Image (tube, rainbow, N blue to C red; front, side, top):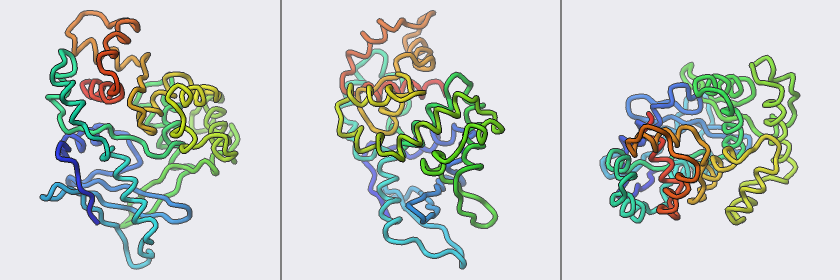
Length: 296
């Protein structure tokens, strides 16, 4: 199976970005190939994603004699997932035209041209990751995520290696706070995760519902849920739902990246950031993603 890549896609930059997440447990990178566990209903599979000389992704499913070959449904799902994961439908030509002429954005864009806003296609996973990372450093966030995934997620084992999928909202909705405390989750953060799972299971929260809403309405729907503030909502709107104008404007990393790109001694104020981003109307999320990349 092959997925055609946009002309401005740079595999090295995208692979480097994925490789920079040293604590990540939901994909594996080996010898320039990406291995991702996928779950569709009751079916699980592992897909190998490689780059070929015809500027395509080549998708190959891993297997062994005692594993049933993947169904057509999960094959189709893998293609959709990869397209969404790497945001392959977005034409970045207008963004690059804007950014290359901009006194701030030209720095990350020249350095990382061809990088896509690599997202989190699953809404529940995206929200959980936003909540897990609240008020802790990134290293510990990855530790909590791994514990959470390995305790409540599912895996496919191939040649003694486990490829994990994120826990389902159904599974997490059935948990109690006491199930998460031993993993070093705070009681409040455990309540938030279980609460989001229950919203997903009740149908009061869904990807389709948010995608069909205007940006402001989608943000309000998310922030109305306990544990989801403005930062988490905009992170999800940016990384999962692909709202181009979403900005986690209070993000410390964004402030530090702007300070670096602007070569100033102090971080800009929120008002200054709003003024800066007003020049990037329609590309705020991509601007944020490229600025973040400067920090790695």
